[in-house]
Length: 217
Image 1 (tube, rainbow, N blue to C red):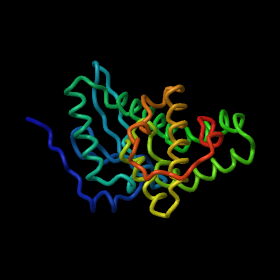
Image 2: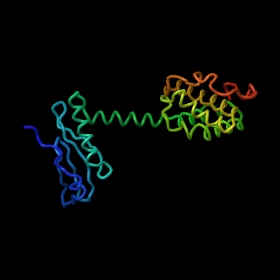
Image 3: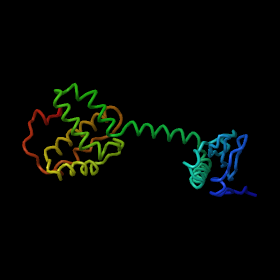
Image 4: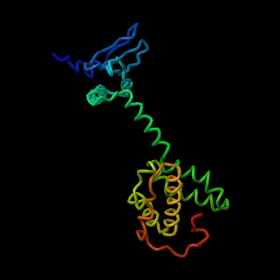
């Protein structure tokens, strides 16, 4: 006979009081709520993998609700059925999340500005280009992983600049974004530069100095 699951109720979890020693309230399927003498409540899941008993830390209550903890348990059960260790999968996912957070457009752009661009142009030009990215690109693209930004997303960013009547600025920002993408490619944070896909997508700009709008712009 299979063991009962979903034994707990939201009310029971909310009203559970701490005692002199750590106590555990089982929900079934290995999931339980651990209540420390301090009053802190932690969701845990016991399981076996490769013949060994292991523990999956799910999170604290009330940050993680009973319903959310059950979803994690059910997903862990699916992983075990696929011969995947849930704890190891969680560690891998955390590392991937940290990696993505370190590879956002804004962070890569700031790295390019500081390590490359400021040594490649005069100070005034460097400051202008930094302000262009901070004002026009970072609010729209800044938090996006560089490798996931599409030509359509970039065009949306540039169209906002166009709509303010700053057509030349839109072209300059497009050029700067292209340099950020190419830097990202060279440092392993992106696979391609989407800016060539936007050829002809912006309104023609007025004459821009070849020196300022070169690859060093």
